[in-house]
Length: 88
Image 1: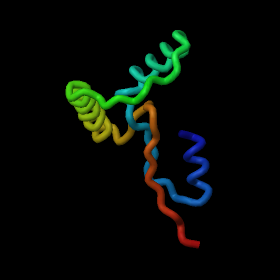
Image 2: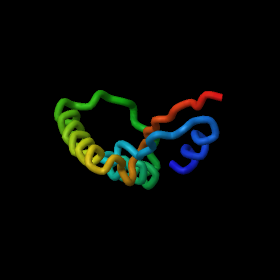
Image 3: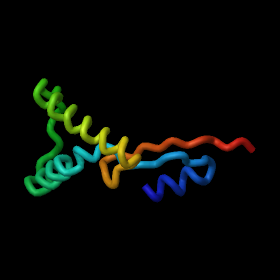
């Protein structure tokens, strides 16, 4: 996040910068660690089930409520930025 902020601030005025997708950080980390331990390559992509989509939607709804309250998330798997190009 700090690296992205430095990069953006070279030519842009950063209005907002925050982690996103906090709700999947722990499950994603567990899967990555298990793959390394089991020495498994990535599995082929399959479409998630309806149940999986419902569960993930609930996680994201909670995440959105937290984000709207705090205006940032303290950790996550991705970063979202809003920046303006300054006129020279």
